[in-house]
Picture 1 (cartoon, rainbow, N blue to C red):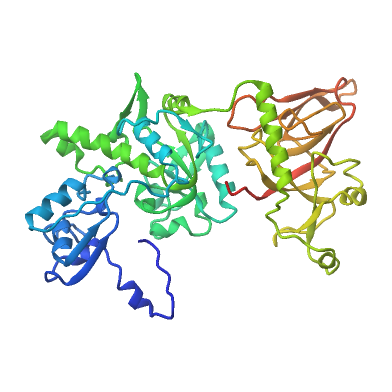
Picture 2: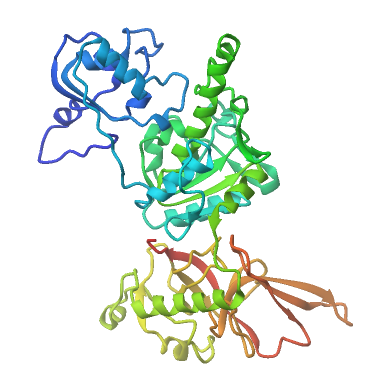
Length: 509
């Protein structure tokens, strides 16, 4: 158990004394305790102490120290060469000590949204064991494969805004220069303009809840046994897909990684055993990382073939355009019918009292000019409180964005803050566009939310003017095409009516 809160006025020491590391039982007399509960028993080591030179064997010491010792073990979470707490070893030491053994199997656990199918799919996909789950239905568990670690990290950061329970982790395939030089980058993927640092060593497992740590990247040593809402996993070059099979290469691990220390020596002495163990450690590492997310797991693969393989084992949305459109419109209607706004509503009296707020506008049915603030605000279905860090100003409004066409930046169902009648450059911004002849290809609404870009060319006077405007989707799903407007032909009735400032609230599921 990683987190204990002081309750009922008990002194902190009284609570903390109930918990101890596995190395604290070296010199205890037999049966000192009535019962010991050993969580994460698969991580037990043979020796204790900072230099692993104390005691004889942690398994034996734990069995001898109590009348009853309960081990919770998952053989598929052995992630280092030093881990000895597998079922076979536990059983062997218990029999050697003439202990009575009772074995119980935990047939299911509420992990990954309770989806046993996802766990079985991982086992089958990584060739850990064959199961009846070669295909994953992403409707049961939010699993996505990204082509860019930057996009993956951006979505995790967005998910994290709701409750600080989303993080990015990675296989230990990158060195740790920032340990000595805080200004250095650890994980660098220049083709994606991606630079991140490993989590601070001073934080330990607390990195997972520390404010601002979503900008860092965790590893197996700081997240095993912990749970998140959403986890982003960067799969390094130690796991690839070749010739129709999963291939591991533990030598691709960083030299600073202790997980496979001693592998070269073992390969020289016991090559067959070493290969099997190294293969299991790499696969178990990623299986463990990819099961930290209760609501979803997003992955980026350094090996493009592995990414393609993972995608091939997913059930995607129907490819027929009309079916897609109908399903998306139904999603919009269902979301609207629920009439649930996860933001604090502000009453007219509170508005008069000066509470900072913004109107809630339904973009599908908004009418009139967004520049006419009074007429525009008159359409509001509700008013909601603004975050403390947002300075109130005319033209701000809140709207829900439904659909997957912008899911890299805006998860479907997210409530976003917009500013109407924006000024200045729009290049590269997410905007709300109105067009007389335009219907959003995803929702059928009269407005569309897209990424704005324009191409300019000099006119007869030498001034740069718009030649073509492109409204692009930003999605990790196929089937979404840019909307291209040609100036001189399509610009009549076209207007950028608002720009998105930030995502305020993401959906729970």
